[in-house]
Length: 253
Image 1 (cartoon, one colour):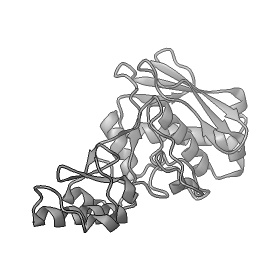
Image 2 (spheres, one colour):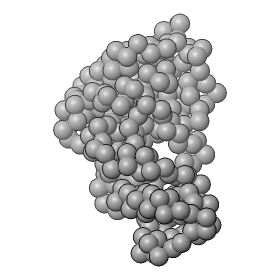
Image 3 (tube, rainbow, N blue to C red):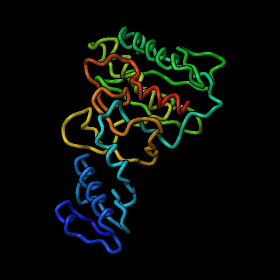
């Protein structure tokens, strides 16, 4: 394989490549660079343009990358909640219940999921007929943490920062909905570049050992405020699903 920069492309004559094909490839490379791909990551092999060594990009695909983005892309892990899980109990600890904003946010987060008519419902508290349970616990700070599904079951714990008590209930709803999203298999929508929602330098979380699989039907880029599953949140969050969040939920569950 040969790595070709934009500066070199115009002077390269590919074997067996007609003028039309060369002009088309020049436009594809130009579009990719404009879309943000590093020039040294773009390759031409057997008259086809590739990025990242193995991803072929057609002319149409390169043009679509430059179109305005209407939402945020969504990624899932290789592990998801199995079809046998139809009711999930979300059980807050007594410490969690002691924070009024967190407690109200949990109710709204549960409502967020139940409003989408998924294969499972969420309920607050323990119940004998629950297929799985998630413990809602407190931690320091203003963020949260959780994990990914295993064995067809959602991850069993969300940790929510008590500092959210100083934010609006909507922000608490947002963070709790986000962490529950991880429990059922969602990756960060901007996992490949956390700076999109967090600022600072570009940072890629990588696929890790759980995978980062693009969910069909979701747009091709992430943006600030485009998804509850963005890596970082703002003080202005509404706690409500974006259109791409709903698409991703519908596709998976």
